[in-house]
Every structure is written in C-alpha cells, then in structure tokens.
Image 1 (cartoon, rainbow, N blue to C red):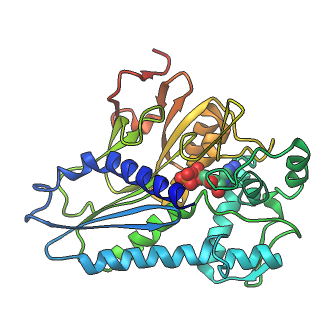
Image 2: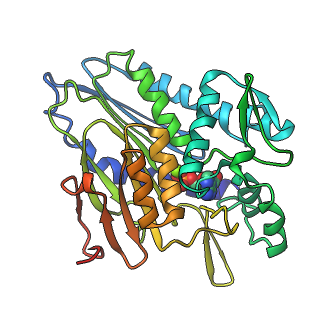
Length: 346
Ligand code: ADP
Ligand code: MG
C-alpha cells in the first residue's frame, strides 16, 4: 500500500512538473511590480496538489488556506471518506444537501444527459468493482459487470426538497469531477484575497488565475500520454481558465498481457475504448473541464467535440495513432512539441 501510494505521489509530482516547468519561468516580468512567489505541495484527492501564488507580499498563509479548503472538499465529496455526504448518500440512498452540493449533482446530471450517459457519476458500482489504481484492483467477470450495470443510471439521481436521493443500490463516485471542483473552490477563495496570479494543479486539473495585473498569458504543458511522467507533447497558451486532462495512463491494471485503465464506459462496464488516449479540456469552469474531459474520453473525438460545443469549451484530443486534433478555439493556442505526434488529418 505504502509503495503504491509513494509511486502515485511521485508520478503526481512529475505530472505537476510537466505543467509548471513552463509556467514557472515567466514569473519575473509578468506583473506590474515584481511579484513574490509562494509555493506549497500537498497531498489530497489521491494526488499532489501544487499551489503557486504570485502576490506583492508573502502569501504562504493563503497557500495553507488553499490546502485546507481542498482537504475539506475531499471530506465532503469523496466516497472514500467514511462520513462524507457522498458516503452517507451511498449508504442510505439519500442525504440532506445544501445549495452547493445540490448544484454539483444538478450539473453532473446535465453533463450526463448531454453526453448520452458517457459521463455518469453512478458508475461507482463499476469503479469499485474494478478498483483500478488500488491495491485490490482486478478484472471482474462478465457476470459481475452485468450485475453492476443494473445500478448505473444517472436518471436515478434526484435532487428535491433539500435532499439528494438515489435508486436503491446505486453508488456515486465523484472522482471524475473532484479535482476540477477543487479548482473552482480555490478560485472563489482567491477572489477575496490580494493574490494577483496563481497556478494551482490538483493532479490532472489546473487552475490558471489572475488576468488583471498579468501582462502575458500562461503557458501550460500537455502531458505526453505515451512518455514518462514528466514528458509533455505540446503546449497551450491561455488566459485565466481551468484545464483538465483524462488519459488512459493515469491509473492502470495489467493482467494477462492486457492493460486496463480507470475510465469506464457506462454502457459496457469495461474501460472505454473510443480510440482516444488523452483528452484535455479548457473551460471557464473547473467542474466542467473535469467532467467534460472524462465524457469526451468515453465519447471519442467526433461526439466529444459536439459536446464541447454545447458548453463553449475547447479541447485537445490525442488518438491511439498519436495524431492530435484540437477544437477551433485552440487552433492558435496549442502547438505540438514532440515529434512522436502528428496533426490529425495531415
Ligand atoms: P482523473 O481522476 O484520473 O484525473 P478523470 O477526471 O477522467 O481522471 O476521472 C476518472 C475517475 O472518474 C475514475 O477514477 C472514476 O472514479 C470516475 N469515472 C470513471 N469512469 C467514469 C464515467 N464514465 N463517468 C463518470 N465518472 C467516471
Ligand atoms: Mg475528469
């Protein structure tokens, strides 16, 4: 357990480095005055949280606040936390909710409907059967998968009268949106501080914050899904936004010569096989960038792009032949930096 956790954390640090090698060196001359950088690393949501704040004074207490608020969010929404709202919901098929929690579930239902169920938070019965990335990961039998599939249906989730409820036996897993939600919560917090700019990465979800006093856009690396943990295959140049990546390399199980990854197609019960190996989504909302990257990964490029249009979001799609395609809004904001990859259709 310990070794796996450590390996995961090291991988997380390297992914973070892929994001920040580039974001880091532009710091000196981006603000009107020379900004100070405050930086921390924490562990939450099973990954590394890296917090980089730029301000005209020490912002280490704000770094600590951010780590604390992400921990609090995890305690509220992780099914792994025994007393979280989601654990109580899974246990009792019903839980009292405040407006914020209701909003998470309502937005999740909308993404489910618009993605024809490719994104579905009731996938928990399946994800806990496979347990990919955990010590007890295994390939379930077809029979077990069929049985679990009976409980995977987003329309069973209701938010009414101050309560969230599920159909009996359903199990909610917010793993596809937790890190993006953390980015949203951090941005809300930062708005009430003197922090002028920030790069927060929670595993594969990143918040770029602070346009007002920053002279240049941020530059962010997109991880090479077929490289080592620190390798990247392209760069995005972006203003304040959230970015999330879903990839088939993030958590895997190798068994009898086959590799299984952690994003499940709710229609089949097996790891999705849409021809994509990585999808990066850019959106104003962290929740949406995270939910949509998972949804697009399952849907595949064509349907994924249609879904992004509905949300005014942009994306980078990497296929298993290592060809890359981006949505129109990113055509002048993304460039490939690794010769392993080609532009799709060229
Ligand atoms: P990561 O969490 O590795 O950054 P994602 O955001 O794509 O990647 O989320 C994957 C996680 O979401 C899985 O570990 C699982 O908890 C959950 N999940 C898997 N498949 C789906 C799906 N089709 N819809 C919603 N959640 C999913
Ligand atoms: Mg996601």
